Image (cartoon, rainbow, N blue to C red; front, side, top):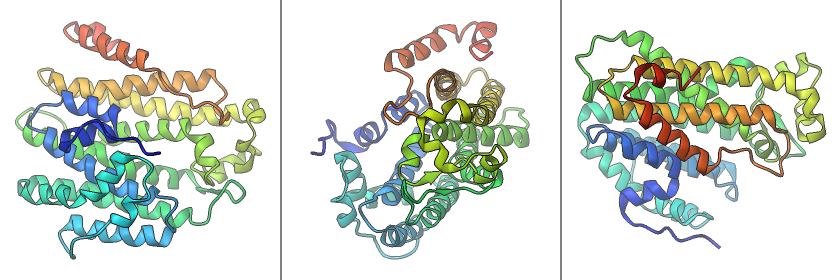
Length: 332
């Protein structure tokens, strides 16, 4: 039975579809909160369309393409009622039913913000469409894997690296337009930041994705280690797979450390933005530590940082912020 969301309105909808992102959104300055919140709602809408597995992939692809055109400002309103009824989550059902409200909010946004939101959604939805095509017909018995590291890099950019760019451009325009920053370096760092967060998700969700027929770790790299995607279905092979898996853990951590450099490059007075960047980095690094300690191939337990630890991370980051050197040492 689907759960009933406890709140109503846009603010509560954000809270119900993603409690973790909602915490980040709440700390952001009001000058950028609406734009980032709207972009997130639209991205979650397209993601929900793409992930409604009970609906044939071709129909999801058509709905996604239509919604992509609606975001761009073309075509007639889209009726997602049939897709909405297939949702196990009441919040995601409402998200689809109220998609036109999100699109109307986009039209009311300043033209410069509309442009940035449309740009990032164009990239995100292109990645979702690619995913739908790539994994059409995939299952645990019929595993489909990315082929190369380049494909993995492209995927993490389309679904998360581009979000780092969007975040940076929105914050730059509305919060620190006059600050003397190296924009090219900042944007490059923001892309790595986003890729790092997505790579952590891929590594954490590996068992679940495999049982849906999806392997985001490249078959070419696996073959170079004498492995195949099907080997990852066997939790008893954890010790054999660990050296290969650690390569991607190292990469994810390196990306997140670049994200920490990015965070500390932002003007120190932008406390709220720096905290909003710090929390996913610190939680991401805590997740990689757990992935190093536990059997990452075991599908019976999802490896996740506890709520208690998340609260501790947030509290500690806030308390240490006034003390520059101690704050910087949060990531070693």
